[in-house]
Image 1 (tube, rainbow, N blue to C red):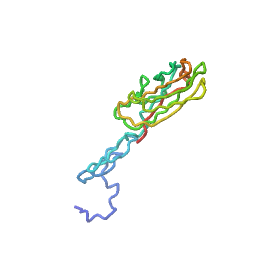
Image 2: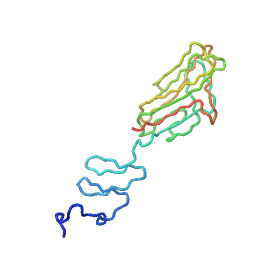
Image 3: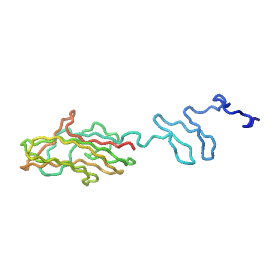
Length: 209
């Protein structure tokens, strides 16, 4: 037999090691014994599993900015004067987790975190009567963010854009509402570009943490 003391340093070559599985990495278990870390899948990374446990190949929970969605309106929407109205975004460019439905984004299970939301609204009044336009972001049916623009004289058309970051929990809902005030109680319109052009939209995605 050959004891460790009889083996010089740096003399164990790769050729003298036992064959293993391609992609495995040698580590140590809780007892300090050598152990092969099972090969992960493409795109996974080697992460620590804590003290007393060998590392493992895992998919990062926030490796991509999903859930993500981009919804827009495929038809004009009429808004009554001085009434807070939920905007209809009935078409989608994408919706990675099918989390946007009935004009509401719902945080999927296990996807709590910080989300970036963006929006644009193109609105007009045929009679040149608009005095102010107000957007409202509702979380769980309560107004969280509100922004408005008032002018000293009435105008016919305006485009309003914005974005924000919101910390959300699983099952939280996010909705977009709009309010238009005119000087004669006339109806106004949220403009659509149809099924191809985008005039008004609501989008969001989870930030990588």
